[in-house]
Amino acid sequence: MPRCGVSGLLNVAVHIVEDDPSVCDSLLLLVRHLGFEARGYPDAESFMREVPPAKADTIIVALLLPGLSGAGVIRWLQSLPEPPRIIAMTGQPLRAINSEVRDLGLETLQRKPLSQETLTA
Image (tube, rainbow, N blue to C red):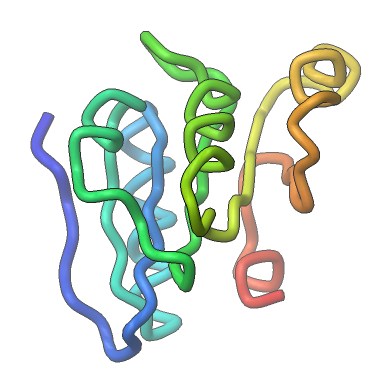
């Protein structure tokens, strides 16, 4: 699946790692509407093949991905010299994923679908 993305108005990029094309497309539209550059990736591997994100960037990553999990992506991002802001998202019940994310030290874990209010906050 090709990567989707277009330049926005601000010098901050939002990277969306989500295997559901409709969720990815919706988030891309919303983020671009807010004036940010947005790029979408269908899996962790295609995201990680790109140049690592800048500290000013934000990464929105689904926890359940084909191949490497969202938790694996988060660990990789946290190991960068200057990690970006990370927003993890899931459609799973929080009880089901608590043990997976407990050791990640996440600032933000959101339930799908993400709203404009959630993203702007």
